[in-house]
Every structure is written in structure tokens, then in C-alpha cells.
Length: 295
Picture 1 (cartoon, helix red, strand yellow):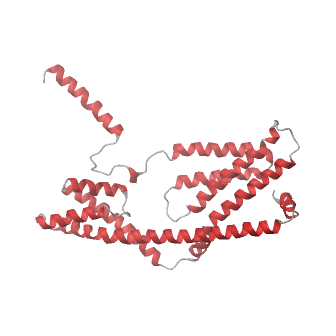
Picture 2 (cartoon, rainbow, N blue to C red):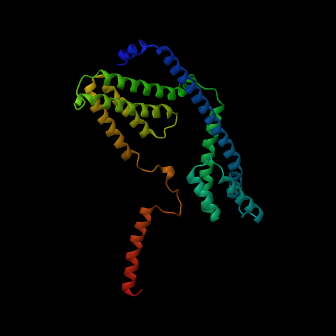
Picture 3 (cartoon, helix red, strand yellow):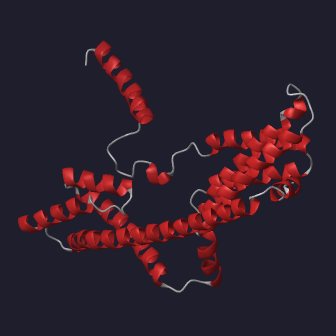
């Protein structure tokens, strides 16, 4: 695919300097990407340590409150309130748990405190496991992945440069009318391959051991695999692009439902808008009936 225009490029004067410049640029991007990944990982581990340090105090006080038979004295209730206020600044805790803590600060309900304790214990356990996994020795595959993961940025940039160069080369050699269908095919293939690069990059950078976003990863993989149709011929470009658009549009339907972690927790007082509307529709007929009966 790229062999003719590569030979044409190498035959031009100064082509070696351009290639060395591109290689140096890709190397700089790789080093920058690896550095940013390492710094992001260090920031994540630091947030986990800070969150565990802050939330352990609250978890301990809630455990004591659960096992003792008498309520907290006034000074201990003040310490419990201060511990909950401190947990509001813990960036490693999820939004639903932050909502539970906020509700417990407003209203000291034992049922709410029990729900918050169980949720806080689950998240602290998950954060502790993630922190302990960071201290373990990487397996063979993980060590290789740490090398190949920063290649996503320079690989995406190199693929984009090759794509535009190939488009310019084919448009220059294309001996057809500008208004004909054959002149549109290289542009359709370029758009399809650009979509492939974008979703390939997203799929590359999101490869982790967790199962979150499985539907998104599957749809991204299908969009990337659609580009294999370009191996048939240039005439397959509309079909590849059409399939990619179909998978892209279908993604809104498959990923439109809110995840369970983003929904109100059990016992939350704030209802969703649809539930509030339904509740009003159930209450209003009762009120109307009471009005007509004189109650």
C-alpha cells in the first residue's frame, strides 16, 4: 500500500533528513508518553495512600459505634463528624460514597451510618488491594506491556502521517475526473482509516486487567476490525466506513444506561426524575379522590 510513494519519497533530495527528523520526533513523543504514564501512576498511588490514611479513621470509629451498645458521647460524636468531613476531601473515594457521607453529615441516622460503613469498607479493601498489587513484582507480560504502552502516542502519530501521505500520493496519481465516484474512494478510505487509528488508540490505552467498559472495548475492537475490508480493494472503502458508522451509532444504545455505581445507593433520599414524576402521578389521584369525597 505504501511501497510506491515511499520509493518516490526516498528518491527526493533531503529525504534522509526528513526521515531522521520524524524518527527523532517519534522518539521524543515516546519518552514524553512514558514519563507521563509513570507520573500518572505515581499520582494515583499517592491519592490511594492519602485516601486510605483519611478514611481509616472514619472506618475505625464506625466499627466501634457498631459494636458498642451505648451511643457516642458528645466529644466522640464531634470526632466522628470531623472524620466524615475529612473523608469528603478524599479524592480516591467514589461519588456515591461521597453522597452517603454527605447525607450522614446532615442526618445522623444509624441505618445510614451502617450503609456508609459497609460501602466504605468495600472501597478501602479495593484500594488496599490495588496498592498491594503495585508493590508486587510484575509478571512477564506486564513487564512487556510497560514498554509497549507508551508506544500508543507515537504509533498513532506515525499512522496519521502515513495515512495523509498515502492520500496525497494516490490523489496525485489518480487519473479520473474530480466529479467521478473513483475520486471519492481514497477520501472514504482515509476517513475510515482515521477512525480506525482513533479507536485503535483508545483500545490500546484502555487495555487493563479490570472488566470495566467491556462493551465499549468490544465496539472499539469491531470498529478497528472493519478496516480489514480495505485489504480487498479500494472499492471496499464505503462498506468499511458504513460498518464503522453503524457500530459507532449502536454504541449510544449499548452504553446509554447509567452504570450501577452512578445510580443512587440504597436508602438514598433523592429520587431520579422519572421516579419523582411517577410518585407525583400516584399521589395526585389520591388527593383528588379525597377532595371529592370531602375527606
